[in-house]
Length: 346
Image 1 (cartoon, helix red, strand yellow):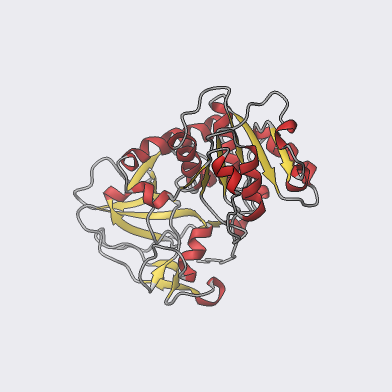
Image 2 (cartoon, rainbow, N blue to C red; image 1 turned 90 degrees about the vertical axis):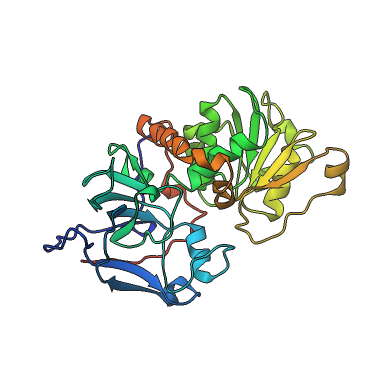
């Protein structure tokens, strides 16, 4: 299955702007998505031209090529995310850009290099970004742009959740809801690379058979709609797949309960989202007789941990999988991203 490019509304395609003759110590002016207060994105976000800024000795000026819109971006603008920049602020938290110019003390980066902010950094929804060299991580320019722009949040979340909670061996199984999200698609493929089985739950919808087929083409072993799991013993549906020790929840409500039904004794469910905005309800028997564990994962918190220091090596690994075709996420399966359309024109 070939790579499917995202629709224009899912990924900013930032224009080539022909710069006038600027001083080597100043950036070009930048067009940005700015909000002066928290609120609904379509009400508070404005396109604004920002003046040139100085490029200091250790600074790198990057012309942004593409930047995605993630749920956390929307939450920051709305003011409901635990960590958010002070207003006025520029939107965006990840993306890919091309080095435009560098300060005199910068080594190892030069004009034309592709870079991503790693760890992710606020303010990627603009045409030019000036930040210290330490913010930028150079990547292979042969990486498809849509993957380079989106690698640092969702794929990295999938990788860490697979590795940080349960010691999984080849032949083991995992179960998840929200399987059509980017994280869900990445879990399917990273599990396959590791020799793990994946059991996937999707919501009931028109065209669910086509969605199931696409997920199986990515490597999913089993895909069930929520209504298919309205049975007393879901494990009878698994054939030769072992009971999973690890589950992932990004939905909440009944969808989370379905993940718990699959888990083996002593299993763990990791929650990383709550798209339904419904609470997780766990039966008393699940705790007493199955000894289940409930955990949470927040990538931004993980970035501050000791393991977070290795995130660039992990990103390079994930990018190598996109170049080899072993990791791809199709935007026509997107259900977890709130898309807003903002056009930046030169």
